[in-house]
Image 1 (cartoon, one colour):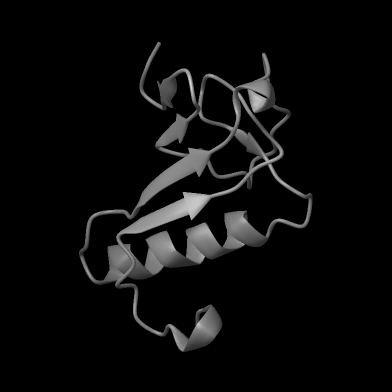
Image 2 (image 1 turned 90 degrees about the horizontal axis):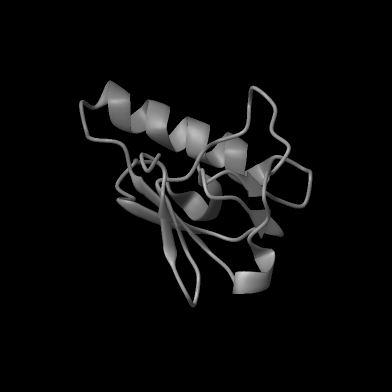
Length: 93
């Protein structure tokens, strides 16, 4: 079961906040893992229904872009991060 009574994975786009982001679309959250666990459950539910993964976009300010965000194995990498002066994509090298 998802928050707010959402029991089907019909969400196609998730806007994800963060404390900091890096060029590889990794994010630093508040440290509770809420968005990481929500996105993992959402993507697994969509996969079970043979749906494409939901798109994930981080929104932030230019000051939130750092050289490298510390990550762990359970941290979810976003598809892109939108900042006022640039957009970072996960697949950019």
